[in-house]
Image: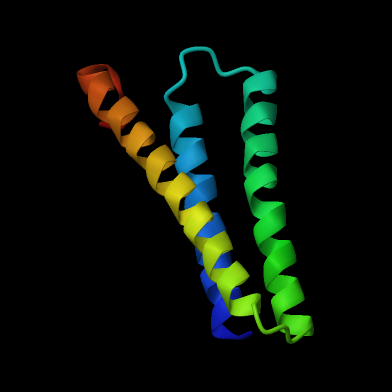
Length: 99
């Protein structure tokens, strides 16, 4: 596995953990909310995986630009979601048994 595959795996893992952090702090954890989080994850993961796959199989001149842009968008979304998850965690205070 090359470095792009490792970075892709780590980026998507961090995105999934951020989404699950938000899900763990929801008041009513329903199956529909979990499905919405999974759909949101897939909407962000599938384009990145497709671009990484395309970049590894075909050599285009602009592939590094599109690959960098795809990673930047996923990292920006991950940072925002992680920030929201940290705010949910900090706001809950002492009522959380894992705090």
